[in-house]
Image (cartoon, rainbow, N blue to C red; front, side, top):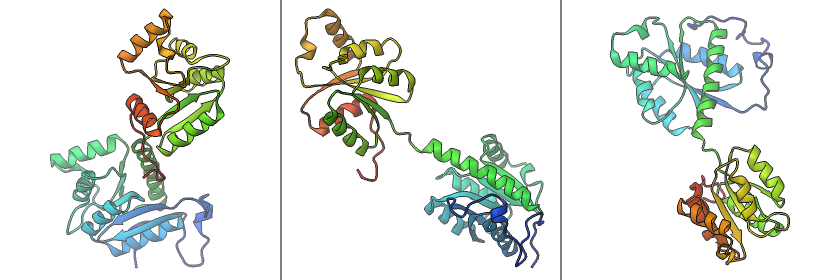
Length: 305
C-alpha cells in the first residue's frame, strides 16, 4: 500500500532498527496523544506507523464528526492532524468547530498547496489568527517524515504552553508565626484549599522572602513575636511591596492601642480592604473567608473536592 508521504531517515520496514531510541526518547516519557482525521486509510496508516515509532500515541478516524467527539471528550489529546479536503467536512470546518469549545494546536495535512489561498474571508481570517499565535501549521503531501516530526514537535510545545496558560497558578501565601503548631495548622488547612504556602517562624527571613518572591499574594502575620511584631513587619513591608495582609493574633485588643502610628495604619489600610485580622482561636471557615476576601478563592484540590 502506497503512502502519500516520503520516508526519509526513518525506516518503516519490518526488522528495521527502531527510531524511538535514535530520536532520544525514553520509554518512560509521558504519553503524548495525537488525533489524526483523514479520509485516506493509507495516510492514516502511514502517520500511525511513523508517529508511534517516535513515541507518540496516535488515534485515527476517517470521520470528522467522530473526530470532533473525541476532541471534546479526551482532554489528553494535545494535537490534531486535520486533512483539509474530506467529503463530509473539511479540515477548516473541523477547526472552526473545535475553536468553539477548545484551544488545541492543529497541523493541517493537505495535498492542496493552494488551500490557504482561498478567497473566502472566513478561511483567511482563521488562517491569520491561527498562525499568528503559533498554534497551527501546515504540511503538504507528499512530505518527508523529518518535516512532519519537526512540525509536530513544535506544535506539541505550543500545546504545553497553552496548558500552562490555562492551568491556574496556585496563589502563594506567606505565613510568619513564632508558634510551630499554628504554622502547621494554617499550612495544612490552606494547602487543602488549593493555596501554595510558604511558612517561617523568623520575621527577618519572612521579610527577605517577601522582598525576593514576587509570586506571594498574601502575608499572614502574627502580631506578637519575640524578634519583631507583625506591625513592625507590616511597616517594613510597605516600603517595598504592596500586598494584602491578614494579621493573626490571640490579642483582640491589638488594634485598640493608643499609639498614633498603629491607629493610623488601621484606619488607612482597613478602609481599602488591603488588611484584615483573625483572632486565635478561630474556625477554619473564618480563615478561609478572610483569605478569599483578600486574594480570591484558590482552585480546589482533588482532596478538597
